[in-house]
Image (tube, rainbow, N blue to C red):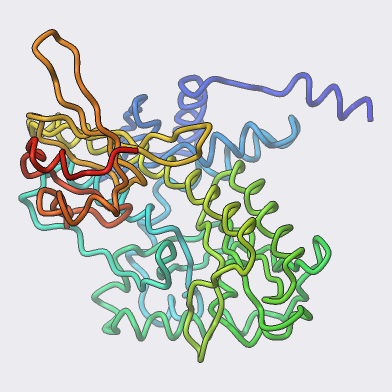
Length: 404
């Protein structure tokens, strides 16, 4: 106990900038030959071929590891730079037994999309990302499973392999099914967690027969909280569902988040499960609000950089959360071309002549019949959605809106 306390007290706790320097030193120590450029604003490193390595997960893993394991955690992430060179040289015969399916949050693809736009602008052809949409938040990607790392193929199988994305995913799922069966472990009354611990726990949701073996009350409903946490309970066990939502919320703090959704299978297809209890639905809504706030904050940060790099005169509005009432808002200002996040409410801002402003707060959905024609969904974004303003509601429209 004493040694554990000492280890906790004397853990290395660098700030983000100092951690980035430690990370780059570890990468160079492994003989990485290319230049490394640290971007403090987005906490990422630019490396070979204009690619970026995000440091958020590595930083959290380093801070969370026991003192004696911090160096190992740093090295496990630092060795990921440059490993894809060998992947690009693999033949289909070499890659076939290593293919695996991955489930990720679609916001990961939005981040890739915005990095690309920052480099080349919106007018250039977009990146050809290949994925299968599973739900509102979840996508299935292709990966190569190496002994010491997982290489995500966001552009799908290599052209030289001569197979389609769907064919590659079929191989990947078949390979996943061949892994040894492991029991789901009961982690709370009526709540079971996938226990493979091989970086593909969340991917097991793609094998519905495994879920139906879990001894829950009624049909299985489940959450893909993080990459390493697949939680399953029964559709009739409301108390267990409450435990599942609580555990998912706690897991979000560790990063590597996938989704706030509760899902189920109907006739072999994934669908959103509507929770039967109002209190549970409210808890789920709050989880979504938390994740949406993080996703929109990342999106705004990167989109601001795109606008700056390519001199686009568009105000990227914040996704704001009213802490007491727990609803989301964005501000739409008269005379300002804006990109609005999808929120519960809109704050219409009308500047006055004395450098002040009048405001009108309206419900997004209820206001759509009146002002919806002034909002154009921005098709350049993968997720979460944004809307470009086409003017501003005039006085007549505002008079018809119901203020909150």
